[in-house]
Image (cartoon, rainbow, N blue to C red):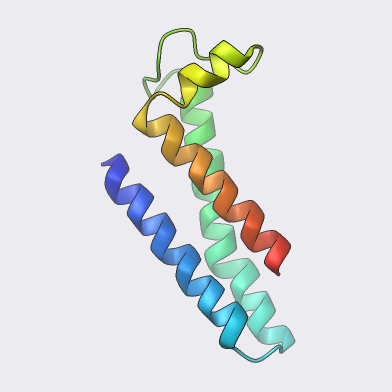
Length: 97
C-alpha cells in the first residue's frame, strides 16, 4: 500500500511540475496547481503525519521527534519514508509556485 501511495504522490508532483514549467504563467493556472495537486499532497501529508503521531501506523520502535534516534526510527519504515517524501514534494512545489 505504501508503495502505491509513494508512486501516486510522485506522479502527482511530476505532473504539477510539468504544468508549472511548461504551462502559461496565468493566475488561473497557479491557483489550479495550488488548490489541486499541492493541496492534495498537503492533505495526504497531514493525514499520514497524524496517523504516525497517534500510533495508528506502525513505525520503528521509539519513533518520536524529540531525538535524532527517534526521527531515524520514523524513517526506518515504509510509512515514515513515504510521509517524509510527501512532505518534501509539498514543500518543493510550494517553493516552485
